[in-house]
Length: 255
Picture (cartoon, rainbow, N blue to C red):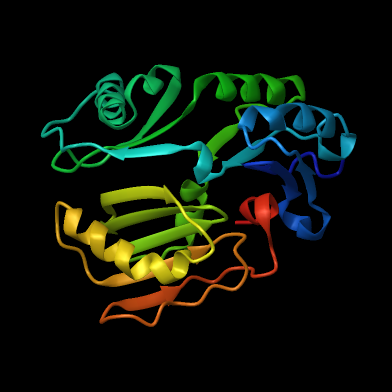
């Protein structure tokens, strides 16, 4: 058995790339690549890589690129709901945006007090089930499969209040929150000029938010190289610490 078997393996999946990493040895990560951006194209590569005894273990964390996840913030339910009722409400909110695609998705929910909306996260159900089965074949128990945002949020300041821009190659997710509650979220494809466009994007989403939020923005770039705060307006900008040398899926795995 590998001496790393007791340490969780971190797997990151992004369009066209998968990365495998042991956190205690970040220099020994492995990157798998394909020309197909669909998440299912990564499964055969991952299956072959995990046959190597070096990656065997008991537990695994899977970081999913925000490209593969769709979010929604529902209207406040106004009362405490059961877990099934929460998923139904989140699915209904996603359906309003994405239509019948929701029928193919697995929806997970982050609960919030009933006077605030629920946060829903959806991914392709068939892909999630295939990935679970693949990991089980290689001996991993109870894999933790979560969006990049779930891992990256750990780096936010304890008393976060304002806006959080989470950027990775080709995609930007913008969260607005305060006092441990999410009040607004949005996601969209972006180009190389994403940082220059960020002030206008924050201003637009602030105008759509249900509640006013402080004009403080934390920028977190993952696999984007060096990130600089925009020099714009009266907002307070902060760039969260990041490894500017890490790229692609390997940067997601190391978050």
